[in-house]
Amino acid sequence: MDETVCGVRHAGYVTLSIVMTTDVGRPRNRAIDDAVLRATVELISESSYAELSLDAIAARAGTSKPAIYRRWRGKAHLVHEAVFPVDATIEIPRTGSLHGDVREMLRRTLAVLSTPAARAALPGLVGEMASDPTLHAALLERFADVLVRDLNNYLESAVQRGEVRRGVTAVELAEAVTGMTLLALITRGANVDDAWIERTAHLITKGISS
Image 1 (cartoon, helix red, strand yellow):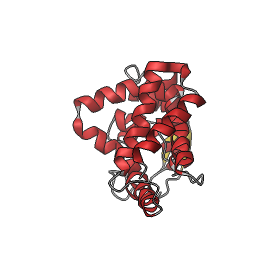
Image 2: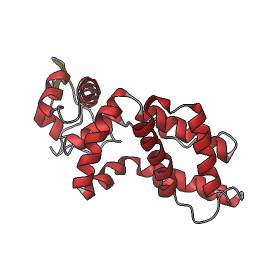
Image 3: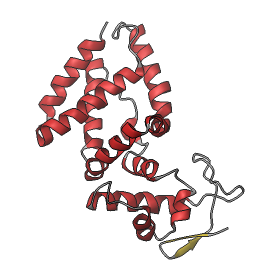
Image 4: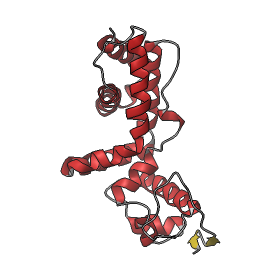
């Protein structure tokens, strides 16, 4: 069955990397996914999480609200995927040193959290996660491969090389990098610079070193 996006009809096709829609046998139209994600970033950058509505997103994307609900469980899941894409920015860096890797993790995290869309989305997402303890885990499922497999493998290799003390977990390192960056953006604003990244990388590296 075809679906409409931006006034143009596209034949649906199966995207194996994405969870199937709730309509059994109905192929996934990636063009609609892309249009909705793009519209979400545009709209939230222009307003706020609280003001953002699925009706407005559907209108901007040229699709329908039911089509959005067939793809995402709700507003928080859609905004999270739109604002924090799973792309090269979350790959584990390989700079040749533990300090350099941590510094690059901080730099990439800062770049992602500093976008207008992320700044507009974070207060609302944090508020929803605080009221729904299951939401945080559900949202982080998208990053499971990186947080559980890739980062764990990275730390295990670092332990074997004698760079990281045994017992440091992937979740702890991810929380340290993301949490410190987020707090710095809240308290320092535009003053989060290369000097802050260097100092924070040194602090985290010392904390996890063997």
